[in-house]
Image 1 (cartoon, rainbow, N blue to C red):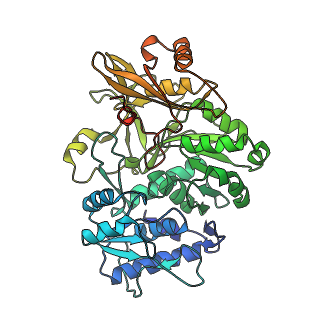
Image 2: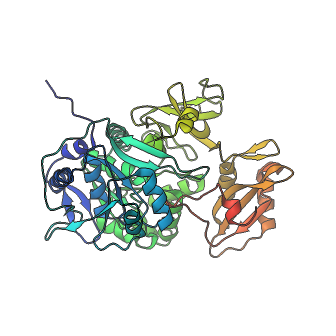
Image 3: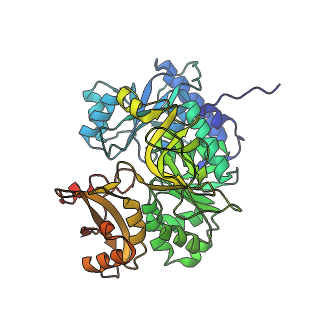
Length: 504
């Protein structure tokens, strides 16, 4: 009789072949699965000896790289990991630490990160990682002594993140071992990952995309990850070649940065022999989808994820099935439906709110009854995104309910305008956003980055928009920028942009 394996992060790791490589890094060191299994076991014993429980939280503030990857895996296998952006300021750390109340904060040796000051101020123990002589980078101790320990359960919290608070105070999203395990399986199955795959991680590991779509899905598949020290468009192609990667996943702004270099090194780009390129966390403009496919001569998979779903909800399928530009694919794990305001499920072709339910979805926000009341309906989680399924069952996101621009009663999807303006030959990047207006409530603004060798005026852009869009969709405000402001995870921030640019 086969024993049903528990759906825990520890079992994602323990199910793999000892001799296979799990993690590689820029200094050339390699972590085998046997090293990783021992690391997880040792760290659990050290935490237990310190009197730290499965139900406790540990904040992690480390730069991207192998140590960040193995710290997350070891902590989440025993207790709850709370990774935080290492570039936060003191006041932000104070906010997040007060909100999360972690037992310890894990940092580099001799760290000068402001989180150390914030932790001391709040009386939270700071724990520095201790490198081990001769061990590969990423294998370390936290404490000197060890004891036996309790295994965490499927229902125990393994990861806690805040939603990007573009509209309100950031909400705390607890995710369980089971949420993450199920999501890792969903992503692995969608991408048909196997032990031969080697992924180049360019995503920050304090964000759901990198942690689950790259790290956990690879670990579940017995595959390996090159744990880079962050995204560097200049080094990407050479490193990808050296590491013989089979895939990478990123946000559209990263793909654009990579494309700019790849177009100057077409041979190098083609010869990477990527099995596929994945995009998620923001909408991939069809123009970029097509360029990635043509320049790298590979499959481009756009997926749709969010923190509350332990990342992936829908994804374009692998060949021989079709990948549709401008669509985020088919349900890829959880059930997905389109609902009207009253909670009725709509047929394909009808636009409404995208709702999800499944084993990868959070049970609810922490200490936030109001958000939970408004976010769940008849057991479905409301994503806040507006969309519809086409007749083939592919999901199109038509906008963010909170981001939809309401211009005197005319609802405008900023995404639609982004995608159109991206077709303009002089435009490198664009973000459309709402600007407060006394008369109409909101009018349309567009922040634009031009290609380095192109010139273009506001009038040119407006005329181009007018030729392709209804008059009410033509931007009133056009700002040419060197760079569009981004959030911590590299996402272009639509909400609040008008204020940032001094338009309201």
